[in-house]
Image (cartoon, rainbow, N blue to C red; front, side, top):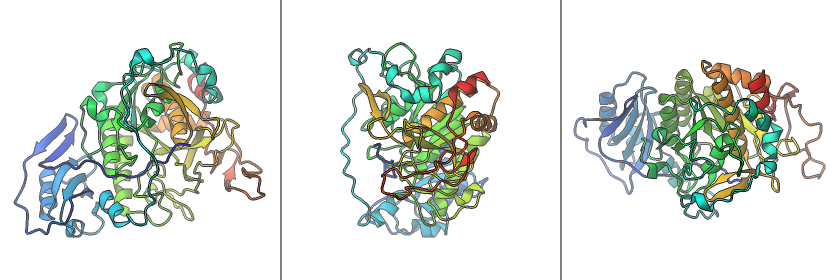
Length: 466
């Protein structure tokens, strides 16, 4: 089963503040000299909230006045990225203004679970070494949502670009080489975009390449075929080499996609320090992600996210505009404008690992179970993986087909049609996966909308024929 992606520290930027605009990153001169500060043992990176309408110069002054250095600023949403060695940086800024994932992890290091995962270095694919056999017969997931039939009607348009916020895409893979939009790809690990190809390629993870293949692997008679093989994909790297996503990376990635006109983004991760927040989450983290998703929506970008593999009952984020109690919060999946996707097995039942939640889950899609996972592209060839990370790109691919068929549609129309054309799935009468006489999860709701499957199983064929 796919390992859940969590927050992890990434490289710290220094020097002058950079402002992200439609034209790219522009340097802003440093402001007044730093006050009398008390540097600590290490420099931490923070995501910082500013009042909407704050200028870059004002942001510089506030950050430096609190003993920090700005590294990026997004005036579109009033969010900045800063570094500081002063332990009192967040306190100097004021309550509810700054959050450091690095600091949070350091503070809880003794309580945090140690990862046993070994991450080997990923090398770029040698196209000539990739097996040429047609493996589409193994793609039960594509048949389950009618993608194999949909491709014959509408394979997707090259005008549509999908932002894959993940661990990087191997653009040398023959199934993806024609789809990757290198000129719209970037790494956001530091909280500021780096457009060099070296930065946005995968380094230790096959995850992003697998997700990308589910969306857009070529329909060329070899290997696998994606839901929307005619669309293009941008590699937006937000997952670092240890498998974590910092909130500033997610903010950077979503804004990059929105400002570059991407119709859809796929976020097969969740942002939080160690695990899902089953108690009160951090307000700064919630506000930063909510502002960013709202901005992306306003710019015409639909955001799709995995429901996570924690097998917990999710509730909407307090910033979603919906009330939710008695469960756990996942960001970005729990936000109002995000299409949250749960996972089903090849038998069409909610996968045991898949999180769920009435009012959070919008749709479901194939993610597989151990022994029958989802086959897709990985550096060097093809491999099966299971998880909600594998389910979400099925929905993203169908959204890309809709955007291809209806180029004038915005996020609201895409979301509404995805939900309307889904195949309804009722709550199971018995959800005892282990056979021990105990229900493994409880499904709230009714046939047309419930906590396991939302509005139902995404339907690619209906998307292009109705």
